[in-house]
Image (cartoon, rainbow over all chains, first blue to last red; front, top):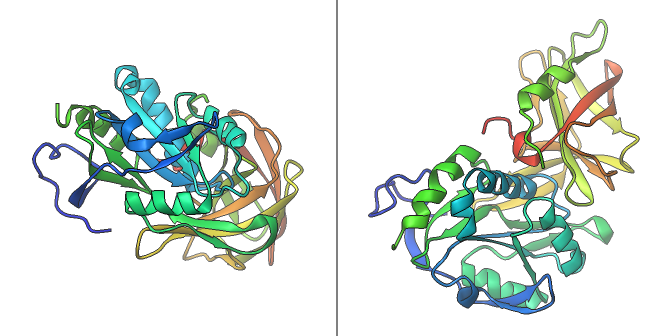
Length: 184
Length: 141
């Protein structure tokens, strides 16, 4: 991850990891938990959006990220109303759309769940600039190596900041209101 | 998912093996959101090695290590050796070591579960772990 010192215009108060070269919001289309096509760029246009790639069998860092965001949503209902959380399962062999929905409902029913074919997921990860998930091990209990950070796109549809594993909930609580104002 | 401070979890379980000095504290498990859940604790005060763990609420318990690669990729691998010494605590925490409870039962925040740990030297030890929100497994908010 390439990072730079904080202080870029509009991001000085952020406590996440500022990206060195802000990138435009990724464009990809996957399938949501209702079975409908979801054009990520179009559906989240102009809105604060948190994007995370993970999988349901991940017991360690995935639930921590999602639970932290859900609890910040509880504390910031006005921000939550205008923020998209998009969880992409990169484990389509085990994670059905229905299972993804049940999983996300543990955190917040507003969270959007997406998945797709391995080819579609590869394209989505490439578009988002994250390392491609790797499937390690045999049988049912394989693990999935995956990008360990939440990508935050401001309402300006630009990724200024990421939240890696180890991020504190207080950092998200600080940053989401500031991110909601970016580009407005 | 209700918020329960992890400090409460720390109060629940302080388990020790008589004579060995080994103590386990801060035992907590993230409320299951999928087929598996992660158990965390800190072991201190002895020279020992964890050689097994079982619980009635999961079909199997495996020791895993999560680590971050150079490109930020998070990996999770089985780990054979979880060791503690009098000079170095064994700390299980998100993003590091955990015991994965496989095919875990439905648990809710506020529940406690019993887990039987088998140490190479100290022998069998039963700990109680509090079920907390996954956001609370990391401790410091």
